Length: 168
Image 1 (cartoon, one colour):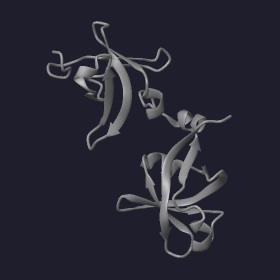
Image 2 (spheres, rainbow, N blue to C red):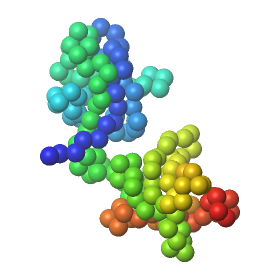
Image 3 (cartoon, rainbow, N blue to C red):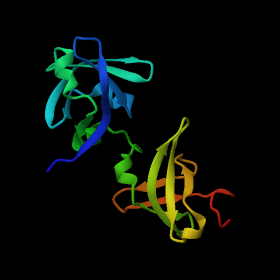
Image 4 (cartoon, helix red, strand yellow):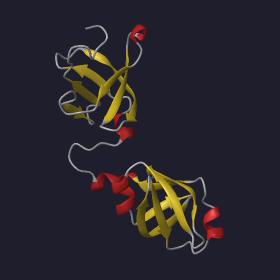
């Protein structure tokens, strides 16, 4: 069974010719996608343009607003293997970061990646420590603080600075 990755969501129609107003998580992925999966249907992206914080997407198979309304609210997916082929070095899928073990540079266990949040500057790793009294630890996902991500070993090494960890 193939794994799918969500790259956007059809929010509404744009005009009457079947163009979709799409919220997206990654502009590069939405712009470079050729074939996507929506509601278990393969759709071909004919063109993409950006307007404000949305992508306006024209699908070859959809010619009017009535056809598009069947897809309103649906996620747009790419095959995970296709996404991975396009990824650069040190580029990771959020799904691959979840549940990785996090250690400091002295090999002390910190916790597990619980979620990843987007911020204006960079992504933020939310790490659930083994001791619940501290709550989740938020770590900016930047090379200076997170020098090693080893997906195969399911391990992340951080280089903590003063104040990053609540017990320091």
